[in-house]
Image (cartoon, helix red, strand yellow):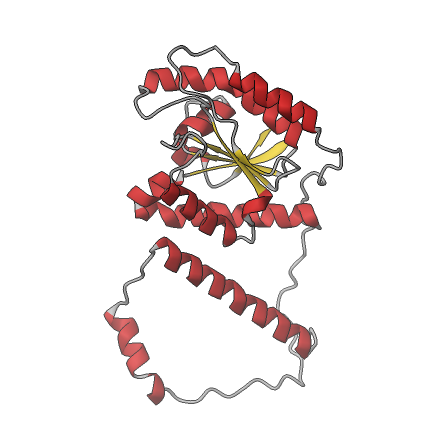
Length: 264
């Protein structure tokens, strides 16, 4: 049986995890209505009989032994320095791209270029020529990543279509996303992120070369350029359809565990 101090540390870790989860759900606007049975339980809590505490001095043997499986780690964090000149050349190549006619000025993306923890690829472009997301969407993304202990300076965010606008029709979006994929691949190759996250159906389908719906692609990891990839919902979808936030939180938890394995 583990020492009491170890049990206390494990208990406090669980409490902290529950607090972070509750804080995230509060920020995301999730609510959990109480049933009449649960409310009655709380009301009668003071009348419940006392439960005899376990005698921790007498260790109890587990009935079944659980075999511990070694955690499968992802590739170690690369140490190859990111070349600033290569990044500048990539940025210039995107700015001079002429694959799509009638385009807006292309956006390279924002965030750290030096081995970001998460490389985010978004569907939707913003009205701001310098930002990949609208302000409300960017704020929600920050809260989502903060909940898994990822800070803004540890990510890079770009769009699957560097020069799209809100008036681009779906058929043109697919063609433009395919044209832009080579630019995105070059960005990933140069920045060498630990994990990739596609946000939205268009970016997920384009990067993974599939016609499967986002609902079928999320919830588990894929592999892209030998890097783990998680497909999930775009913050714009979460703001318009709050019922999707629980699924997005599940995806975030998987990403947190994967990144923790990379650090060990």
